Image (cartoon, rainbow, N blue to C red; front, side, top):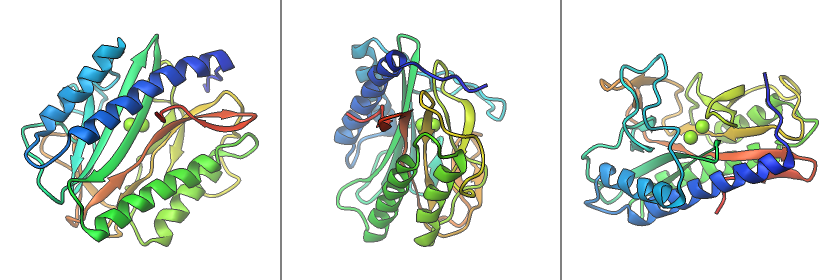
Length: 255
Ligand code: MG
Ligand code: MG
């Protein structure tokens, strides 16, 4: 079932989304050579705590995972696509980092992700990140009443494929509300005009994930959480929680 939110509820979700945006900004500012992923998780926790927000990631335990998730952010470096567990790995100049963060405030969830490089970054990594952001913008632009889920999926997938990147099979966005993962699923590739019709009050996480090497394959790490590319190429991830309104898409996880 797809729950439609009232304008007032979307306003409340915006407050949760702003906490996520602040946490991601703080993590990005803290990231640098020698800083560990665990330290980045602590930075995000500090922002959530100060806002009185909880984490929908911490102790999340889906059926595919061997253990509950132990952190408030996913930190996925270089060939890690998503779901990386923040550990004692220390960032190095040139790393490509994807941080995914959620917050729960007054019972409403926000969910967003960014990718960035440590230091100047390699040109090919910056191009990959730019394309992930462009795919996200295209997906958001398609998130208008009367369109369908397939229109968002097609917009996202077209940008990724045109640049020659891979799209990990079976992963994508989702509805967001009082829980992090709700109906409908929002694939990162699809056919326009297909799927659930978009209505005002729907709130969706749109989240392109790109594989630089151009294949769609991935494999889980020994930890059972981290997804890595099989060709060792790098990956990028960009995500916003977006409300569909009569006035157009409203990004809830912007600053
Ligand atoms: Mg996320
Ligand atoms: Mg998400």
